[in-house]
Image (cartoon, rainbow, N blue to C red; front, top):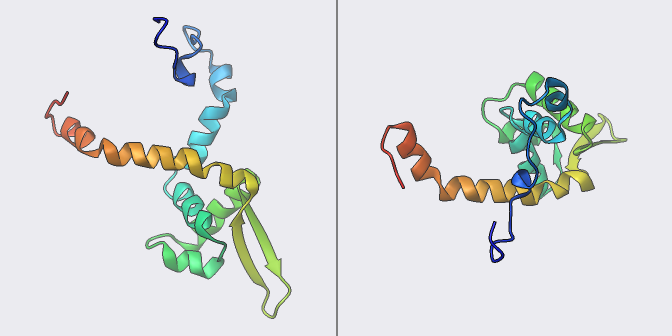
Length: 135
């Protein structure tokens, strides 16, 4: 690295061991986050809840194709990971509202950066998938 180029992405700042030990890979916090957000619905729910709290049925209506079972499982997993808060309101019947926790809100900036990158490079990736090599 030259003296003028000091900005190294954090994922490249340290050399990975070769081969990468399975136990280290299993314990990697980055892998855990990607597993959580890499499923079909989690990232979408985080984004929706980033705008404002939602009731369960609002979320179900807002996401075409998600089953009630999958919505419940995904919300529970996000709650277990500390990203979503479930609040029960003492009404008849009880009202349940979901919102992002402060930890969940900290995820919005990196998700936005990833989304911006994906939009910026969508054509290049589509070209690569179809066999058209780009620069």
